[in-house]
Amino acid sequence: MINKALVQGLIILVLFFGMFFGLSRIDFVSLFEIKERTASAENNIGDLIWNQIQETEDVILNDSIVKTLDKLILPICEANNIERDSLKVHIIDKDEVNAFALPNNHLVVYTGLIEDCKKQEALQGVLGHEIAHIQNNHVMKKLSKEIGLSVILSAATGGKGGEILKEILNTLSSTAYDRTLEKEADMESVKYLLEADINPEPMADFMYELSQAHDMPNALEWISTHPDSEARAKYILDYLKGKKYKKTQTLTQKEWGDYKVLIRNNKE
Image 1 (cartoon, one colour):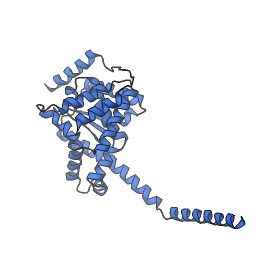
Image 2 (cartoon, one colour):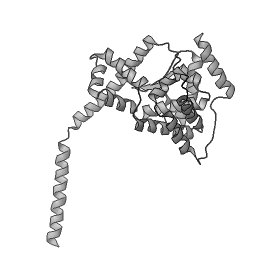
Image 3 (cartoon, rainbow, N blue to C red):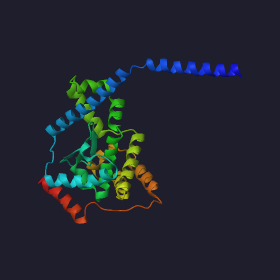
Image 4 (tube, one colour):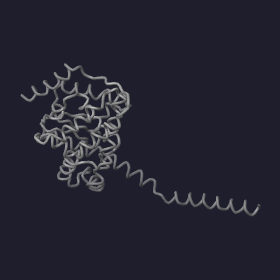
């Protein structure tokens, strides 16, 4: 018994010192510095790309248009403990049916998307999808995988920044995330909406309609970045089967209709 206890004691001692030695070999300072550099690069890249967009696109600053979109986003944030002020939401006057997230919590929404959504809940679903990409750090995961962390760090510090920034913008605005991240963002958005008592069904309907919209060239931009939209609509509706949920509308029907008219009139 004594020998057995002694052996067990020695094993525990060896394991303890082995673990201690292993941990001591990890350069925590370097790991922390890499994390800090990555976070700083993310902030810089996002801001640099947004500055580039501002120079080439028509950014909408109309107070009524901006505040109404914010009114649609706010219940999603409030119900899901997302700090609204952490999101930098921008509206671009462009006919393409598109919205995309940039590093440093920038969220870009084209007026073409707003106009094409028949129901406000569909727009809220797309916004929730992009917010989910931001909240789950999908943006940097995608860029690190497709462009490379070292290249991103170089662009953020001014090394050959111009061309890389264009490549990053193109990657985020016109190419798809992988299917795992897309599904995660879809389902996260559905959960956001359910928490906010917003009906997620129009989000699925919108995806299905766009997947069938072969005669709508502007719609193809969003579809090209979100492949298999018909299948995605199906798994959202499958998830909702049997669930009871409220269907509160953020805007009245008149307010929603007036909002779309306001956006159309802003183009004139």
